[in-house]
Length: 405
Image 1: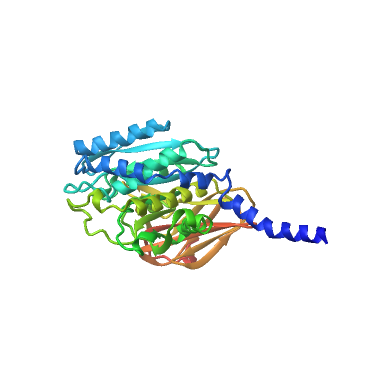
Image 2: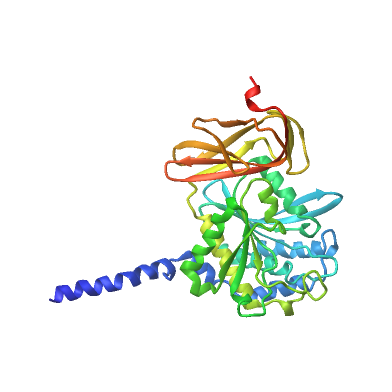
């Protein structure tokens, strides 16, 4: 009888022990990161940024904010660099802190530190930049499987200039960026609903990042205090620069519209620090989850290149943008990094299946009669996993494939 009672007690206790190890154990890195987020320090960061006054890209004030961010990254012992850029007659600097990982994959947490010329930018985007600095502090004492880059972009208010140049250079170098998590306007909340909801905006290929964020809420919801509202991609912040070059990303945005946006009244009095801390916790937890995840298949469309004009399968000109233009047939080439055997790659045109290649190098030739913008997508299927990549291009093809020899 005693043995039966003992077995029953063990069966009742085990689920609680398991729950403790998943989301509350002393060795739980994510919980430690979440608990490291401080409202007081977020207030200090945001107040400091606001007090520089309006800081549009190219101004002395913007340079001073960039220097403040740089020095904070250095203070936390991170490898920190400036990334200088020029675009359409404007110059600026992105500020990058790196936490080296064990693989050649990279995960980015980003925000923009410039403001419009009339606003001190406490919410847009002092709130996101404050989260970036908070992340630097709490992440600095930890290691991760993949490299983490914390990037403060400038030129966002001018048209995503700083991130556009950075994403293009990363693409041209073949950098393997798993995800960009962008924080832009994440501190304004006035209602109970607003203070407990965050919008996550992304495209179809990137929904797994939102899934990762939801997983963090499922496991650490009591420590975060947010729910997610999923939204289709809104190209209003720096994550879009990465999407444009075929990378994947998500945009964190406050649930309630800030009526002081882009105005002199975008001050810290209208930033809800409790809400900002919640968003910061979720962003850091999501970043950590991505930075330690297994990468079974990583698929990239490498031909035609983004930012080029093609005549058939021959590149005839490079463009200073992400746009791809093809005259004639489209020959698509796919590059795959995989830890498992690839069974096939399926190719789609505007969502319609067109064909399959089962041998490396994975290629497919589209002969559709087509004009103007179209979407090309390739999906690699392994033994147990799959991964896709897509590119939007402008096509001018009047010759169907079966006429070609």
